Length: 205
Image 1 (cartoon, rainbow, N blue to C red):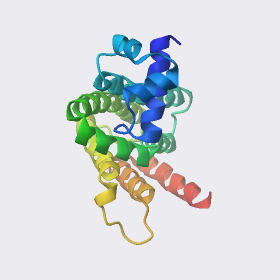
Image 2: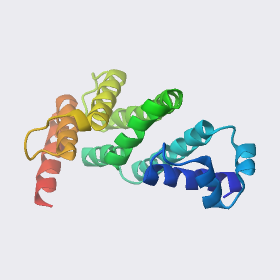
Image 3: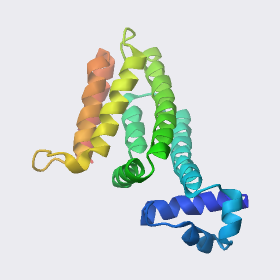
């Protein structure tokens, strides 16, 4: 890991743990043992370092999910588990998204568009694979399905603080309900059977 990569990695951790508004360039320079001048020689501004740090977090998560996809993707159960991985650390994701939108709107838009494109590509390839496996109906519009699913799930996460869910229903419950029933609607008979088995297994855990 180069010095620049080490700084980005440390900054990412600090932004998640302390909040992007609270962390100053002085704090990052002190944490990684470099001068503030050196930090600004490597990064034009806090905005640039913030962008690189958030993308670093997103790419690490995507690499982990893609690694799992390559090792096990012969059932719809893994698709649901992949979606859970994409939405892992929901509270941290909601907090960072809120603060990015409020204090760094340009960076927020840049990060949002790039993450949306990467997540969309992964979901597209997975749905296409499950069509090939006979678990999702071949007539489904993959691009439209990806768009609807991605925006529905991310809206649930980002808007969680303003939502009034039924008593006893958590955000995780709402996400699982949304994702599972979305795929039930485009699954083949064999796919629906796998979904039912997944739900039964999840209830017995």
